[in-house]
Image (cartoon, rainbow over all chains, first blue to last red; front, side, top):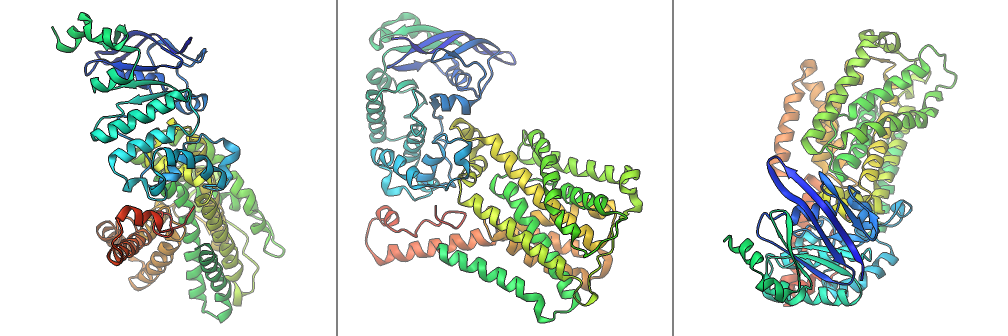
Length: 243
Length: 347
């Protein structure tokens, strides 16, 4: 298996803080890769650089054998690289169905077509069923619970048939049942061929789901390997416990 | 719903078309001409300020650009039928829309309050140019247009009907935005632009599109106004008060709705003209304006139509929850008409 995403010595400095410091890592196609690290280790900054929200000071990002350093997030999305946010960002003034339709990555020519066409509805139907959002499809996203919003955000980025999905703390702030639901959805989508890169603080979740696991500390990769090895690695323990 | 909406629109415009035929006095028709001007401009502003959530304070600059373009085209000409200037309106719209593209590309890199400041700066730049490019605009001396050769008894009618047409165009474009993916994209931009960018919405494209269509419409109104007035001066052609009125009307009626800006214009402009008439030329009416703004902020922060819509929705929902002992979520989902979207229409 080849690397779907490659990060090559990327550095990002905010004032005096080297948030990402010469970081290199790879995400192989067909994996659910975990990305963990203590607070402030640069996970989210790295996410933002990979998805085009931030410009790296130096270094390269490769996606699907293309150099995509500094590419616009919308373009990356249409290339098949999509992400979710830590705080479940959906469009509250749009209905659940519309939230899916707007994320379908339509082009200029479709801009003047119907707001939600029959085709859009059909395309969204399967996701709505799968994520059990069909009963609330016509509610405003603002009326959903936080957990449902997280599901909706996840479902929405799947509308464009992505190849790689970056999930930023998919289980943060949701109840245990929802965590299981989320895990089930990731697994089923993974089985359908999508590669995942997951930032997560819930270690049992990461250990169950991810292989391999990459550990960041102070903006660098300090370890990459199977979950069992991570737990045994002294360097990782150092980073977390601050020894 | 759609049939009812069509009926409402048709009825509204039928009344507008028929209105001057009832032998209204000149001052009433004159008032209606101004109401229509503001209704059109508010509808146009709504595309940018309402849907996309970019509070432009620079729209009066494009009103002025339209007014001066018209003046420069016809200054010193002798008119035949008097309808020639109206035929040039689409050209003026295109000129303004083309000027709007680079302005939007630059100013829409900023957001919210910064965007408001950048656009109002543009307004004052245009005003300064109008004052100082004397060879072109006549500076503070103003510039004249040919006197419209219309019959004195029905002098206002051509302007009135052209403005009815412009309002129809503005409302049709708004309707089109609401019911197409343009509207979907604009609402996404307003809700969370960064997120929208991240899910492949053509953010810059729809913003610039909305802005240039909006200022094109605004410029046409400015052009009609300059012909109506026959003589224009920089301080009235590029007037911050126009911007403020348009913003206020849209806020009062309800942003990002089809009828809100029109309703706001009918209430405020009619009220303003009456107040200005009653209180004389002392500009006391501005105090009334400030009061209106305060009341909106306190009582109807989202405007008349969205507030009413919310109340109706709540009431209907409460009634149905009382009526049946069905779990709320299922109930809501099963009811087709339950979720009144913020724009008041269904996809």
